[in-house]
Image (cartoon, rainbow, N blue to C red; front, side, top):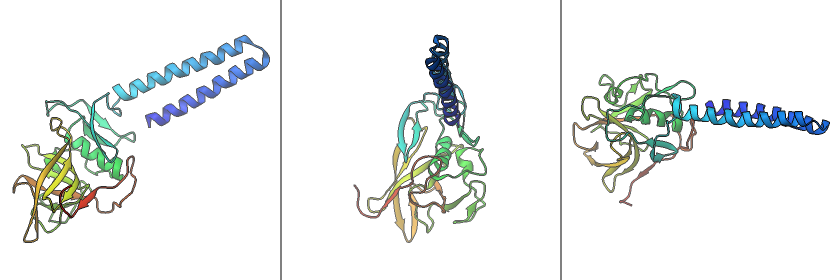
Length: 248
C-alpha cells in the first residue's frame, strides 16, 4: 500500500511540476520554470523520505534485513544467532499481522498470505499453538483456516504444507518445499534457525502410515486445500513439487 500511495503522490507532483515548467516555458517566464524545477526537487526529496520511512521505520517494511533465501518469491530473512530475538511487529499493507520479525511464525504466515492469498483467522500464538489437538486427523483447524493431518496418518505430506514441529515449549513451523518419497526425505524452507533456511527431514511410509522425522518430533502438517497450481495471492506464484522417484 505504501508503494501505491507513494506512486500516486509522485505522479501528482510530477504532473504539477511539468505543468509549471511548461507554462513558464510557454510564457517565457523564468519564474514559472523555476517553480517547475522546485516541484521536481520536492518530489524527489519527498519520495526518498517516504521510501526510507516505509522500508526502515514502518511496521510494513523489512527494516533492511538480510534476505537469506526465497521460496516462490517470498523472502526468508536473517534473524541472527539469537532465535528469541524480535525486530518488531510486521504487518501486510492491509493491516494483516504476520508476526514478530523474523521469527518462524512470521515467515509461514507471510508465505501463506503472499503466495497463496490466505489469511489465518487467528493471528496470535507461538508455533506450537498452530496445531489444535482437539481437531481429528483430516479435520479443519478453524483458527488457522487449514486442514490438519497428523504425523503417522494415512495422508502424505505435500509441497506447500505447513509443518508443525514440537521443538521446545514454543515449537517450530516451516513450509514443505519438496516431498521425495523415493529418496526418503521431506525438504522444508524455514526462518529463524540460525541461517539454515533449507533442511531435509527423514520421510518413510510404513503400513500406509506417513512419517516425517522421529515420532514425537513432528506433530503433523496443515494444508490450504482450495489452492491450485499457479494461483496468485498477494505476491509470488504457486508451484511446489512432489517427487515420486529417486533423489535428484
